[in-house]
Length: 255
Image (cartoon, rainbow, N blue to C red):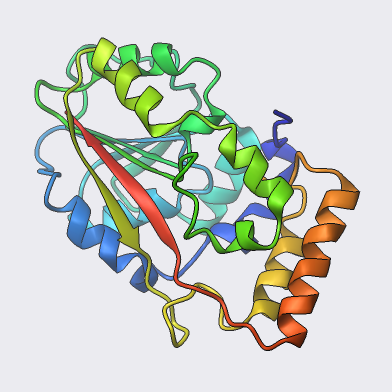
């Protein structure tokens, strides 16, 4: 799979990923059930420009280490601003520079399909987390993509996502590293728009796709012809008066 150059695309990334914290409220309520911040910090793996670092810092007043290998993403995230008890660290999930039992939880949002070595990541998290600490994985998985609005119109982008590690593989890899699979929860993300969609109408989705053409991990690898096909599908749906559907994303809980 072609990989996004996040150093180059960092300035564009917040256009498609930054949302008001109010839209993440379902995640706060759910994560709070599994998270017990205390003396140990939370590890935000693949923190990007720091959306979830800011969310966790606001919600839980916790110390957070935002692990992000891209210098461009760290630079943009620092400009946006991190909570007082949060800091960036330049490192990869496959080689964590921490001792045993350093963290009370690990958060991986749309990260597993970017990892070079999922097994190494699971092993490193097993070492770096305190006993019983959860790994919380927010991601879309092959065979479970029906509530991703973009994929209704861009079949080539959906085909990219169908090549990501499936849920069963992720659970199995973490089980081999000593983790117990607790549950999978489908989370309906809130929206400021009527009907619960992230986009008020499909024109906004079209504008988002154009802005994220080379930044989104499912749009960047597809050809210009495939991208044009998706825009054509969107244009027809817009002309016919179709409306966006609610967005659903999975949360995988392991400990």
